[in-house]
Image (tube, rainbow, N blue to C red):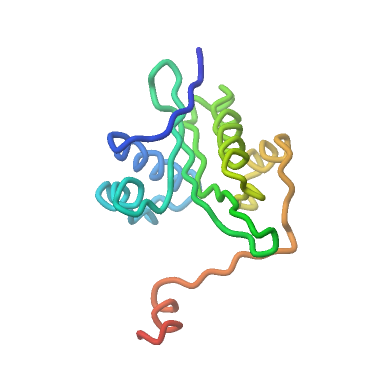
Length: 160
């Protein structure tokens, strides 16, 4: 069984949304997904794509995905690569698909001259943390994520 990694195409949008929903359920937020196929199509393949997706396949069947986009480091003066989501279906875990997706993303980061490749992981997700550590990832524990959304975002913008 060979794992292949390929860029997603517009015909993969329904598969990407299915994977996003499965990931949300795994992360204990099954009702949090607001994305729709038209929204994803525009975000990934519209006039100004906001992100890119790689699809992992085994024997022609989609078994995982990685959604990523560029950031910028003012200190390094270069782009970075941000991994928003990495997901492999439960039955395909341990097949090498996750490692293949990370390897492909690291290659993209190098090919594009990125200074870094980063992502977040839930603190309770020890299987993922262990997997990332085994691949050389280092926790950035001194940094905390800050988020403003919904009503708080509107208030901050002075649009409440």
